[in-house]
Image 1 (cartoon, rainbow, N blue to C red):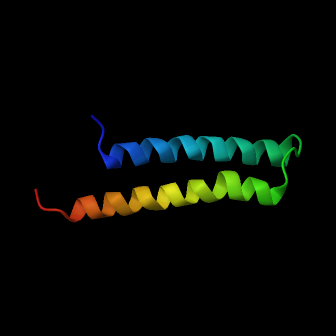
Image 2: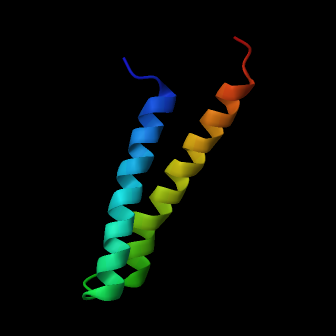
Length: 65
């Protein structure tokens, strides 16, 4: 069974992949999304999930044992 650390790591990696793909497509191929929509739907949740993952990782490193 996965713990919070593993779940947030997987979620962060998936969101980073999707966010990167959308960013690259939007910038180099064609624009199909409004920039505000892109930030709110893809990049902001990615940033939040990475920050949560890092916070869990840092808190886990401080626990004894």
